[in-house]
Length: 376
Image 1 (spheres, rainbow, N blue to C red):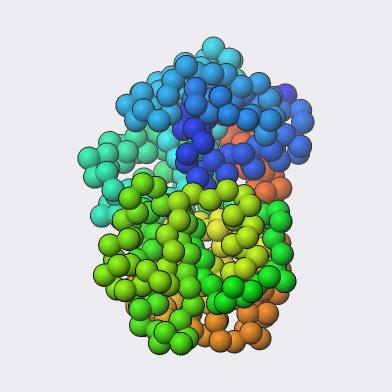
Image 2 (cartoon, one colour):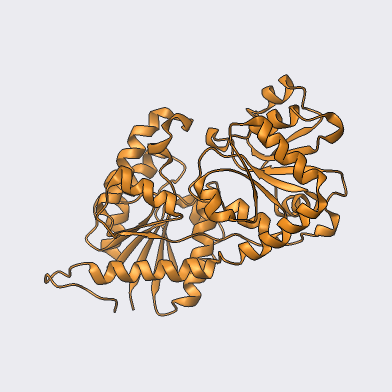
């Protein structure tokens, strides 16, 4: 029975998609690999949260995942020490960073290479170089690297140059938010929704800019959730005179999410760069048409079940919004196509392919006697 230490030092309840990944992945791994032993090495913040999703024992590291310096030190050194104490066979780091050196095989999940490919999008530029260094040394230590899409795999190969054939592409999956009632779609008029943090690569400013180009008689409302504190989009919304049309909200609870998915005409994601797109699959699973910026990862996830537009072309984006709002037949077609597309991406598939990566790492790692080890 292989024993795996899971590096959950970054799990604090505030990391969005990476935490969804950890929860849903390990919820399924516990079901499909009942003979494996999983030990969660958690931040103090994460250990204080609900942990029923984790399929094994959890350890409170006593370290903060919110303090950047404590967290960075812990990733580099504390994880490897915990692996030795627990006498594990494998370490899995599901949140992009990991230890500098381990004595057992390590599998690292790198969700994207944003710090390398688009450093201009970093809101904390002083951290860019240190994070790149941490990713580089953790990847050099890793026996295998898991990533979310072929595009991310190409960038990992480009920037980090791991040994050939050590990258495994394991797509993520969406979710099925409860309480969604699509019979309410359009009940409050045409509505475009968008959900996510305000990091620059999300490009949420494209939404008010596109709406400002549309005639008021054909212009839908937009609700953009995910802001914190003073929303950086507000000055632009005011400048464009779009405050009547664009509502900026903070983080929303499950009931609000269900209401937005119930009433929305479409979900829009104008990102300039992504490693994957969980919101695309979640919206498709809810029966909501999706409008996506035209880049390879969105094509990989959305296929023929979405409408695409150039991320930096406000008029083209406005045209796509107008098209989906005005064409109810198109809305129905995209809803059907999205429901079918979403079925191709499941957390069970992610878990099985992740387990296969673990097994490859175990079977390829030399034992202390110089021979290759294999799962127990």
